[in-house]
Amino acid sequence: MKPIDPGVGWQVGVIGVGNMGGAMAQNLLTKGWRVAVHDIDAVKSQTLQRCGAQVLDHPSQLAAICKTIIIAVVDAEQVAKVLEGDEQSEGLLPKLGAEHTVLLCPTIAPKDVIRFSQAILRQGASVIDAPMSGGPVRALEGRMSLMTACLHETWQKQETLLRALADPVFFMSEKVGDGSKTKLINNLLAGINLVASAELLAMAEKVGLDLATTLKVIESSSGQSWVGSERMGRAISAQGTDPLKLVPLAHMTLLEKDTRMALEMGIDAGYIGPLGSSAVQTFKDACASGLASCDDAAMLAFLRNFKGQVRGR
Image (cartoon, rainbow, N blue to C red; front, side, top):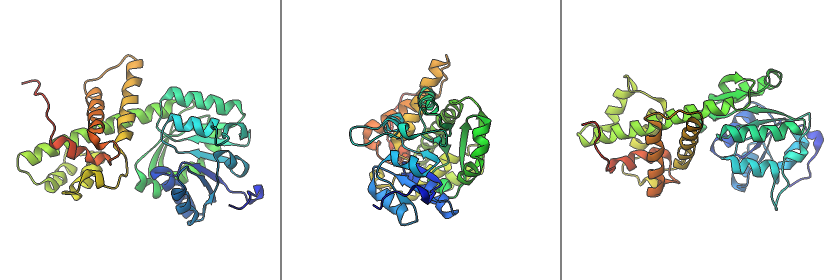
């Protein structure tokens, strides 16, 4: 790797270039933005390098050449590692200053967003609570959604970037953590809809209906949901394929994590509904059955053989 030249002027850094982070970086590169990236997976970084991104060895190096840094890793543990470092790598946090803005894009608990944001603000940097939704295809096209919470001044300074990344971009409030709360609410509903879609298609199959035709009917009727259409469409197109071999676009563990965090958020606020806990348990059971690393479209395969108890009869 060539020595870093602070005069190069790379505009945006992306830490974590997996399905979503990689699509976001690719989207920006396509639109002419200059991008620097870091990921623990060298193959993912090299893919973006061929598209014009500069690859850096450590997260802390991005602060030298990027005023805006997007953190798009998976969970709070990984965010902590990026910011605080470990035995192998210095963290990003000590390198941040008043000239920097950090976008926190992972789906993590609001309390963790607040904790990380406070650490970033203590360095004099700005922060945007900016969880994302929509999947890698929409992220690549700049059509995913962002749920942002930050100071109005910070949002206005970053508006051009935010609108390049997403459409729509929602401003929730100036209270960091409100973006994360909104994302968890959305993802719990997505999880409920996914489980429900898989359950009802499994039932449709049992009563002798053609799955593709049934899904088309649902998509044009009152049962339609985006996640149900997208995931069940993938599951149906992969009929006969071992779910373990379906290329994951969203691992089962992600919605298991997100729905669980959403349920915990509700419990902390004193609310427990009838559907959330059922969806959380279903994702937990699916992961325990060996589908944890599979695409969450494999929920259909899991529920085909589900043995539950009949209630309300």
